[in-house]
Length: 130
Image 1 (cartoon, rainbow, N blue to C red):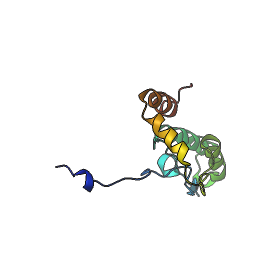
Image 2: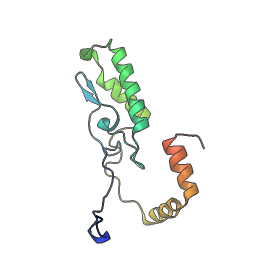
Image 3: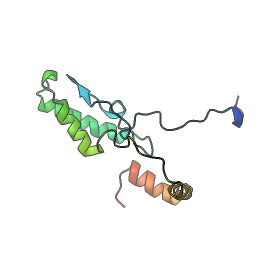
Image 4: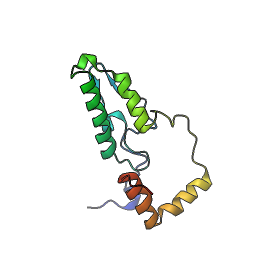
């Protein structure tokens, strides 16, 4: 069956840990986190496949640099690589609410299929240049 609109739950935000709000460390002794576990889901879309692949490649390089010895992994170097690639973690902490005019402009843009295709599908998801 279907729930009536008044009984359907309202979801807010993402079910994923986002880089902008994450304070999770990039790893620990002998462990490196990648993808969603590292809080790399995209802020605007929740998309996480490309960040998972990119962080996996960075982790693989860190493992090779350590001679495949978990005791020699440099978590700080890996974390620095993540920060270079994805920006620093927790950068949105303390950010205020989005101003009303900006929310209205976003609402108008997001109602246009051409904008959605170019901005989200081509640029954000497929990472194609403008």
